[in-house]
Length: 149
Image (cartoon, rainbow, N blue to C red; front, side, top):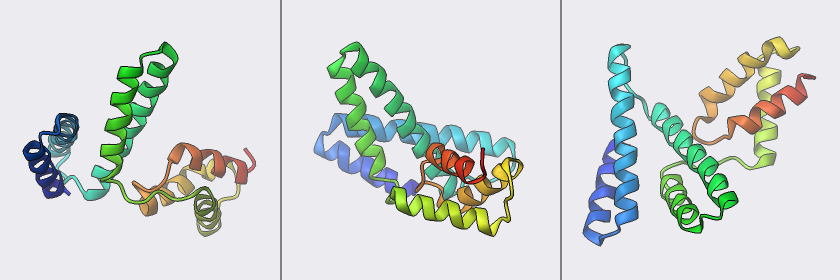
């Protein structure tokens, strides 16, 4: 994925797309921070870690977008929307609500979860399978509902 970011950055620079260049540089800076953090833990940053990083970036921008919309800052809101779209191009196709519900039901069954005390086990299973493809905030609510919480 690192090469994908580098080549996309080169293309954006050649095209003179300033927003895309800035967003790709931000992604690369976040990745560099993650690599430095991983070095201290003697591990390598995987593609799954990169997907999680990208999801966090999207979520952060969505939160900012809401704030800017409420404050009437259309210019900043438009900037956040553009960044979200650029980042999402690097994420795999997200699961639909129906697919997410089916995945949660399968994970609950597979992990033999019987109550709220097993929620962490179910979420861990979902994270291992659907990193970068699932909104874990929504998934947590679905798991909680299925486990009777």
